[in-house]
Length: 351
Ligand code: PMP
Image (tube, rainbow, N blue to C red; front, side):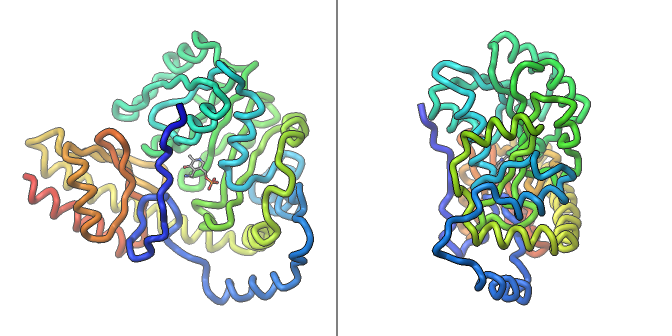
């Protein structure tokens, strides 16, 4: 069954959008105009560079790999789909955790495969042996998880990822590093040591370029030449390739500056939300927040629908899941202050 993946409409610009894990900062206007000036040279009548050599070159310096270790994607969504659609056929299994990025389910279902899920849900408790055992018993073809995890912000240790790579030596292990920059720990350096390892990355989050739809798949050269045969030609448009290449070369400092801001704000927001949780301690189920290594904070609330409505009334959109959980993207200081105020008011009314 194809699931509703909860893709939101972000055309309601009046609302403060804290539901998509995007960067709260848009590009500096002067920089933007300079880039637009350079785009005048683009021949709109010509197809894009299908392999995206300039873009791969720019990303390879940033990621510390060679150009031949990279495939470009129309967002990392597309390269995740590339791996699933090449490897999953009717009845094949993919091992992941729950909760995790909903598109793994979506693409597996499109290919008539089945998803086996390890439950990460009890206070982000990860039992490596149980996870490996589940995959082995199910004879899964692919192991796939986001690190840090979306939506909980939980981060796996490198040590555990290596054990997973060892345990599934003859299977594909895809580590989705969409939020890697907020955590700082990557397994990209292991691609030659572990031929079963594929890493995906994106410019949609820390780099603040979600509108461009640019993502990357990183793996050893043999995997890249094999997977490239299945890639859609011209999948990343020329404008996106051009802007992304300039950004990767010239904007590393502003990336680092933004990262510092978001990580500081994440810790401050978490501390403040925890205080609200503590103040409602007489009712343990009332609200709970989870420590995060990404640019969002995951929570659970007894009255989640009311909480979502309280945010909606203040024109703030946060992400709501099917159960009692929700996720709030870390924004700019004043945006996070608004979140804290709404949460405080809600808690006061309910307790
Ligand atoms: N992986 C994870 C874990 C995500 O949260 C997202 C976006 N929400 C993606 C991949 C896809 O990102 P994009 O297609 O914009 O690169």
